[in-house]
Image 1 (cartoon, helix red, strand yellow):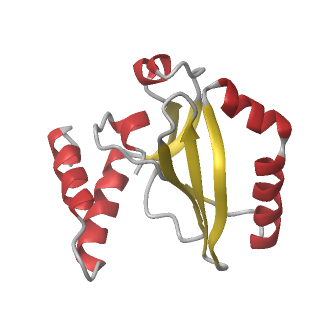
Image 2: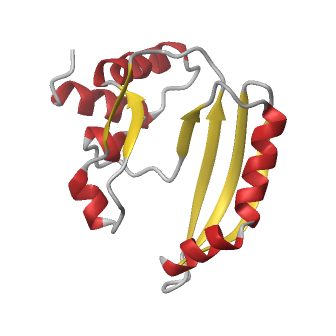
Length: 154
């Protein structure tokens, strides 16, 4: 769920979940490895006070590819465990393109960005589906469902 950038959720998530439909698993793996090794990418993170301590290719299947990344906040030494996940599954809803929350971007010193993401109704349907099909209920799904309902989505 794209909570803070598009739905104004306060739930923190260090994970990045992306849908992918065109690149093969091998091509994506090569591209991610290349990006993690790029001096310009690493310098960009360091300029923001972040360093990659480690990354692992945690899950690599034809449907899901996941990297676990240990980010280090240089000023405090704190580690922020992060996951980058790409999924090749059928789209579960309407995708719209709109700018990320301008106040949030400004507070993070990010340039404004247009990005595709699921509509609020699609996000609601995903959360309902997750609650129905998970073997163990996750508190984050209940929190997100309440947030979406309070935001007026039907």
